[in-house]
Length: 152
Image 1 (cartoon, one colour):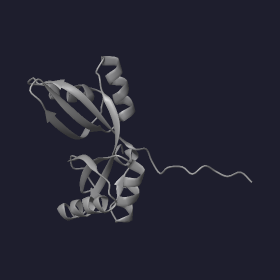
Image 2 (image 1 turned 30 degrees about the vertical axis):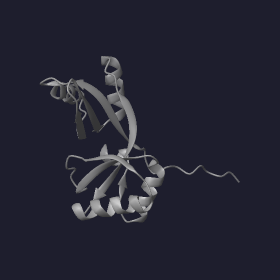
Image 3 (image 1 turned 90 degrees about the vertical axis):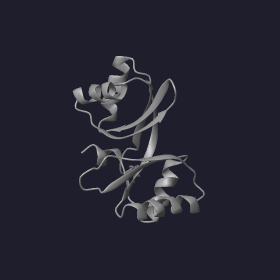
């Protein structure tokens, strides 16, 4: 009897980090490029420095985004993030952070996503171990999304 491989329920959500020049219109140009290809920015965070800004983006079509960035010579890095559904808003954010704290898991950074119809409030969390973080949050009653959920 052949054992079937256990399939993951979905793909990890990718976050793109891009260094932008600290100039008027830099973010608009980046989002315009994605928009031209039918890709939506679902969430972003900006970390401003004097001469440059690090933009972190979660998009609706990560594979196509990677292709576009490569075609256009845009330097970027990818990393996985957890996107948690906060059905009860701020109360669930505390519940989410309490669960990760109890599991002794550090949250490197987090930021909200733009509203998505049907999900309520969403927050992206960068943690060291995505699988363990997903397990901790699911065990505490916090739903964690996959890329397929966001790309519908």
